[in-house]
Every structure is written in C-alpha cells, then in structure tokens.
Amino acid sequence: MFKLIYTNPKVQSIELFGAPFRLTRVDGLGGTESETQMQRVPYQDGMIYLDSLLQDKPIEVEFKITGRDPEEVTEHRRRVSSIFNPKLGMGMLQYVGDGGIKEIGVVVESVPFFPDGRTNRGRTFQKTLIDLRAPYPYWRDPQQVSRSLRAYEGKFTFPFTFPVQFGIEGDKTIINNEGDTSAPVIITIQGPIRRPMVENRTTGEFILVNTSIGPDEVLFIDTSPQAKRVEIHRSNQIIKAMGFFDHNADFWQLQEGENELRYTADEGIAEAIAAISWHSQYVGV
Image (cartoon, rainbow, N blue to C red; front, side, top):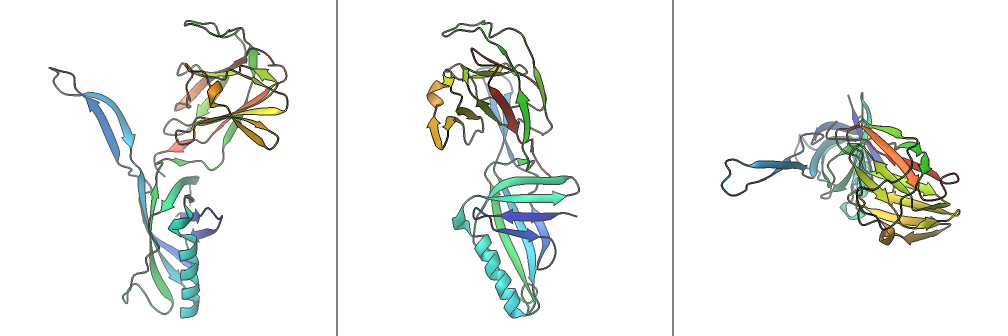
C-alpha cells in the first residue's frame, strides 16, 4: 500500500489514501517514455547509438471524495479545486510506500474534473480526476545528502594549458550516488578562499571559479540543468558570479555509484569550509 501527498506552491497539502480522499487509481509512477538518439554516417549500414533521453512524465490520479452529507462533499470539492489550481505553478508530489518516500516536481494540467453519473457522484461521494505532469522525469529522495569536503594545497596558475597539475595530492572524498541516474550537486564554500576547484575524478570533470571569496561570503554553485548558477552570498546580498566560472570547467553531476572528488584552492584552504549536497534520483517508484 502507498499514499500520495500533493503540496502546491502556497504550501497547501492534500493526502490521497483514505477518507475523505480515497485513492483509487494512479498511472505514470514509472514507465516514462524515452527518445533514442542515433546517427548515421555516409555509406554506413545501421545506425550509431548516441543516447536515450527521458521525456516528461504524465501522471493521472483518480480518487473518491467522501463525506457524511452533500454539504461536506461540496466542501471537500472546493478544497481539492483550490489546492490543485493550475494557476499556482509547480508543486510537489510525494510517494509514501514501503520503500520510503520519493518526490517529484509536477504541474497541474487542468482544473480537477468531477464527472457526473450515478457511479461517479452521489450524496456522500464524488469521483475526482487529476492530470499532473512532471517536466523533469526523475523521482528523488526528499532529503538532501550532504558531505563536507577537505581541501589540499593548490599550485595551479592561470592561464594554464593541459596537462596541468592542479595541486599537491591530498585528501580525497568518495561519494556514493545510490540513484538510477546522475545527480546534480550543490556546492557551498565559506571563505576566505581564492580560486577554489572541485574535481570529479571519476568523470574527469572539474568546477573552477576564478575569484576570491571573502571571510563573510559564501560561494554557491548549483549544477542542476534547469537552474545552473554560480553566486556569491554576502549577508542579504546575492551576487551573480557566472562570469568567474572557468571556461574549461563543467557543471558536472555525480554519476551512479561511487564518485571520487578532490577539492583544492590557491589560498585559504585552512580557513574555508566546503560542502557538497545532492538528491539521489530514480526513474520510477
């Protein structure tokens, strides 16, 4: 058995399981369609496989509103219409089952549908249909996993050419992404520090920011495809810092399984505090 909990952008929630909102059917928790990308070169038999990309995920939910009398059923209907209001924007759908809790961002595609007919509506019940769509098709753990990063002495200079020695070998951090696919990360570094770099040695990619972060500042990096950003947070001020992101660097993500990370900087490694956080992601629940 499982239940669904929907929370809209106004932080209004509704739980679909038992009375007064008894969940009767849901489609789309898995089974996301994918697009296979291939290419062909001249005079080649067959195709060359490039990648498979998941499409957005439609989720259809059906439940029955119950009440002691028609007035209570009407009151619950109004609540459903208010919470599942498409004009409010992106909400969050949670799946709560034996395997724990997973969540996915969804939009409501239409105003809730309350069908007529003797089997759909009565004095003490009302069948309800909700159409949701997840633009980003992965379920994720609701709680971020966070790990601290330990730096070692850097000695790279700018500009540089490859191959380049980024620093003296030091502590490494092994991070395990337990999801079904790669996971975007959020990296925060509390200054003082100059030109910090975080390298994913598993993929060969690195993040490098060519600036100094003061002792009262925090460098914030988000590698999510929908929200890539580099910012410097100072008190209540947020400074856009994408221009300091090195042109050879990557907004890398954690690969499935173990990832070996290194964190270094030109100066300030003794005082700076750095952390990485992420949500493991899943193709279905």
